[in-house]
Image (tube, rainbow, N blue to C red; front, side):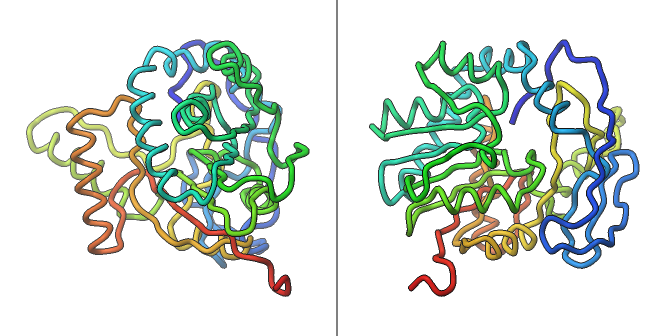
Length: 304
């Protein structure tokens, strides 16, 4: 997940309106956050920003040359984070070809190439990130939305979406693209923010404790209004909604746990993730702010 750029001050227009749910196609929504203009589909429970910024505005925001400054400054910590994720992916992978959609500045792909010896490819919408990946790692990322790129079919054993699915205009369309790019039997690994109600327990408890101790504590905000320079989350996924979405687009969710998303891992964050993952195994409930999902390729009906 990206940190806010230090230079962006403009605001988005919020002029693009979504008329049908991307998950189930329904057209009736109810507001769940007026400040952040988040609505929920009345039929399936999918939550998303509506109206939303245009894709041109979003790409321009991510192409700010300073957007990734914090990533580069935290390079050592981020390498530890990506190394943990690579270890997990290597356990799940069925082969050595990898596509990373929304590859950012390419650190994960570079580790997979250099440490695991994998054949790697990546996509990225940000011109700034593409330039950094080329300069730092010698990676030639495909620039643009994966849905619009000529990706080879059935070419990859693993496809990863590291905090990407929540950013795209149509999660359904992107999952179709990932399915087409995967070889039969391949693996899809997704990390995204966790919008299950359990994810709100920790911030609310922290705020309550601060108030009890007489310290200033702002109310926990579940959805923040989008702005250039910050994270642009167009979708908010609960586990049931994501499971349905995957099933409808050719995947079978086989595991869901807590994502270790901390860009500067420490013993505190490692302990927190270990505890939350243990709770998830025992109860099936995710108290973390992010989820990590592994899904298996499922052949379309009628293909043998």
